[in-house]
Image (cartoon, rainbow over all chains, first blue to last red; front, side, top):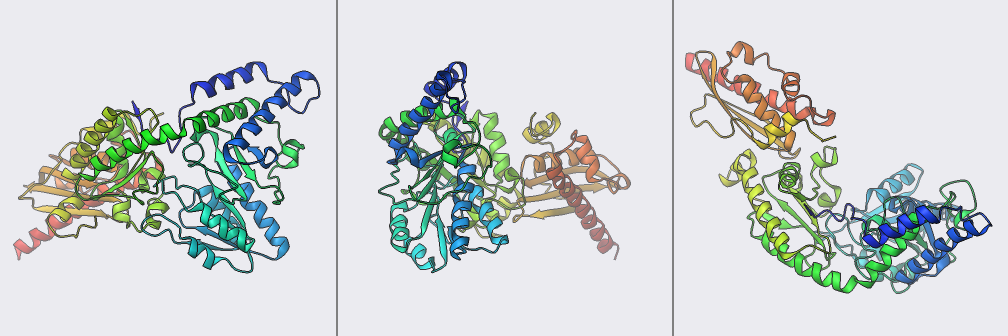
Amino acid sequence: MIYADNAATTALSPKALSVLVHHAKNTWGNPSSLYAHGQEAKEVLEQARTQIARCIGAKEREIIFTSGGSEADNQAILSAAAWGKQKGKRHIVSSAFEHHAVLHTLQKLEKEGFEVTYLDVHADGLVRPEEVKAAIREDTCLVSIMYANNEIGTIQPIGEIGAICREKKVLFHTDAVQAIGHIPVNVVTDQVDMLSASAHKFHGPKGVGFLYVRQGVPVRSLIEGGAQERGRRAGTENVPGIGAMAAALQEAASHMDENARHLKAMQARLIEGLSRIPHGALNGDRDRRLPGNVSFCFEGIEGEALLLLLDDKGICASSGSACTSGSLDPSHVLLAIGRVHDVAHGSLRLSLGEDVTEEEIDYIIACVGEVVAYLRSFSPLWRDLEAGKKAFIL
Amino acid sequence: MALYSEKVMDHFRNPRNVGVIEDANGVGLAGNAKCGDIMKMYLKIEDEVVQDVKFETFGCGSAIASSSMATELIKGQPLSEVRKLTNQAVAEALDGLPAYKMHCSVLAEEAIQAALQDYESRMTKEDN
């Protein structure tokens, strides 16, 4: 099997697995208990907090452990909104292609009287800092822009946006779920106030993540209960998961340069190979993208059929077609970069793992070419395009 | 559990009656590219019987399987039977479809009924 869906989730690293099992077996005390067995668990939490904070340039007390990226996104946005409401600021700036954990939280706030400006991400899938600046108003309480997009992998100018927000004294949150562990992220140089991350995107376990909140930024607990996480996240902590997350992030951070170098070479080979398929196009900027992300649209075919046939050939990938999302519309990300419906249905996302080989890349290229040609061979849409009854878009 | 039944996967992987009938006397189209599904049915009807049927489909796995199964159900059948074909029959023959994929079977029914109408209007023109 060639697993090329690392943006969906990653395999647990052997190191993270051993830490997870070790703490599940041995460090099962409640970190809030005062006897030694509880305090050992507390020690695991605090060590993990230190390790994670160091990886992103934060202080220990600025890390809140959560159940994952979605919870962190919800907490960041709802905290900023609650603060804004108190100050009479009910305007938020975000982008059109955020993750649903952000978009649906913003939509909920819109129903409660907030106004949200969704910035255009242009054909290259990049937010323009000057457009962020222009969108900020007197009553803006928050700017939330993702670090890197989950479907097309484009890396946003977070440092520039951070500087603008700091200057304008507006809170800045970034959903960094796809970026953390893959590209260098530093909350100080990026001037970020809040940042969301999820362990299973960097070879840690599922069901655990963290929210970075800069010291002094008002944050509210989403869950009522005990005083865990200094009152900012109730509930007994997932000690094994948190320990494993920290181990995975440290491992990812220490191999980041070599991983990125290898992935960029594999990415280039894959993009070049898939570009030879006629009437297809890369989605998002060629260079400002995550090292493992390759996203294409192919005209005249539908993505789910493509995925099923690739699965038969042992390749795990993903698509933004309507049929894979269970809705009538294709991915909002592809629509946001201006792909029309006909084309967006034929999308393919390959998110490579660090251990992918040249041979595997060549096999993927051959299989995608074969499957696309096969599906086009009996596609009435492709027939119309080839006969000139419809104009090619790509 | 797999997304689709074995039957759906079989008809998706090995679709029956794929292609075009050059001298078809009934051609029907259903769906549109915006929604991500287009089915085109070609019928060769002689003596009120579907002598041959072929299809082309742009769409997902269940759309391709639904088209394939629908062609199997009507091949060699008299028009009186073909007119009675419902999307339910297509879905049942496939051992069921997920609820949000039922529209694929509806498209198959629509494409076949459209092809029949095309045939009938051609016959009327010939009679005139």
